[in-house]
Amino acid sequence: MKTLLFGLVLIAGASGCMHMEPTGPLAHIMGAPKSVPTDEDEKAAANMPPPRPVPPAMLVTPGEVTAESADDAVRKLTNELQTDGKSIPNVPFVSEYKGGVKIR
Image (cartoon, rainbow, N blue to C red; front, side):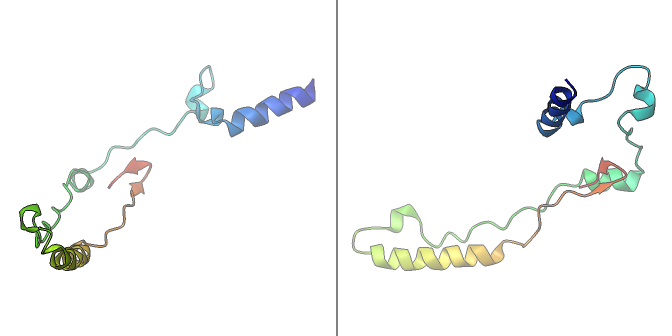
């Protein structure tokens, strides 16, 4: 019986049941940490919109491509994709937390 209960506890932990919030008389002692209020600077930084991306170069439009100009259009499109790739800022997509509260 102990082996069965031990196995169920291991399976429950592996399946994500450890992330459930506690209930009962000891919930206030062992409960999840409460979020702390942040100051105004942190709230302003969290609500700041991300910078607007640079618009694409638009060196080739669909109306300019014909059967005769296909090779030239491919060359221009390759150049456009390289130009647009260089203009994209290299910004990591990382969330920052301070005191259990998401800042960015």
